[in-house]
Length: 270
Image 1 (cartoon, rainbow, N blue to C red):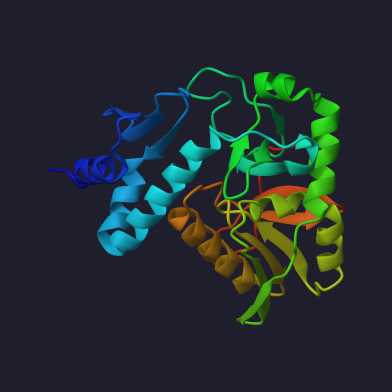
Image 2 (image 1 turned 30 degrees about the vertical axis):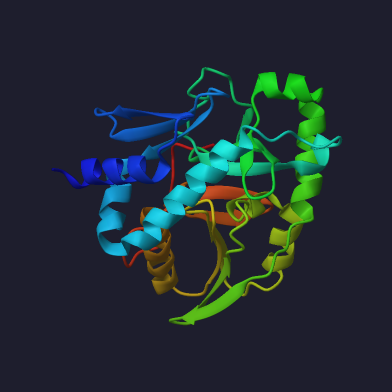
């Protein structure tokens, strides 16, 4: 029995209930858990998770169960009388779906060649991505959502941890609130960080729950950033992109980093 199938059976046992149903897509190696009452559900990609499960065991399993439970609860919760106060932007990869498994179109904006901006209604311990239909139900339009998301993003804490490696400085934001990567959209914060930078400023959002800001002062710094980004990308619950960005003039420029060489600009981007 493959590790994915073992993980599938274990999750089904932990999450079983008369009000839930499970659907396994063998081709994509994904397990979807659906609440029968709401018709909403949560999908898990078992391929990468099974490899982590062999190392992290019950720790990862508990996290997955919690993630699914909270996601299913969110479908039953309703926004308060002022939903705009609970709307935040979330960064996802450019390959992230444009609609829900139920076929509802998600509200999003293009960001870079590697990333896209979606918008979420925060429900406390979890959040729900906004669809066009959901926005109509909340009686909010696109401009209201965009303005509210920008405002609410600036309210989020921007504390960071600092590390020095081979003469380069790396700053890590990891609040685990679901919006760490989203902080890359807070231009005021990035401009404040820019004042601390003595070399070249680079940023990375390898997964949802981390933002890396780098003060690159030598060629080795690029290699270190590339290795960090890839490691975080491989281990993140919601991967975004392993490709870092240079930050200059309030713009993000994706870069390819070749070992022991200066970054090569991505010629496919504008």
